[in-house]
Image 1 (tube, rainbow, N blue to C red):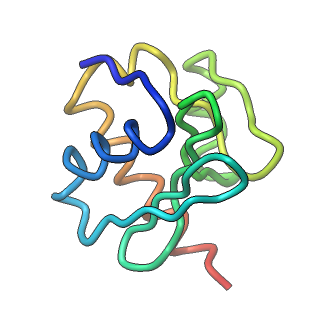
Image 2 (cartoon, one colour):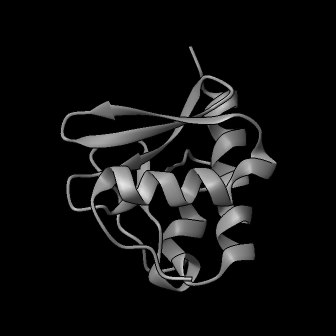
Length: 105
């Protein structure tokens, strides 16, 4: 599964793919899109349609080991190998939701 396109198009595909996570919604933000699970943001899609997942000290090493790069905030680029695997992408998104919920203020 490859996802490419404008941020809103990428968001539509991910919302459909991530229905097992809960109520996933989107909101336009700074030219991109934020994805929220049950009201908590866990994904950023930038202006180019690049997908970043929420991370913290418990998951940063997983992203780093996969060759990812950190966004300016506590989000990391989803590696291409993960974007190409539906089951793996869902697993990473599930982890990002857990991190987002653990770190919500």
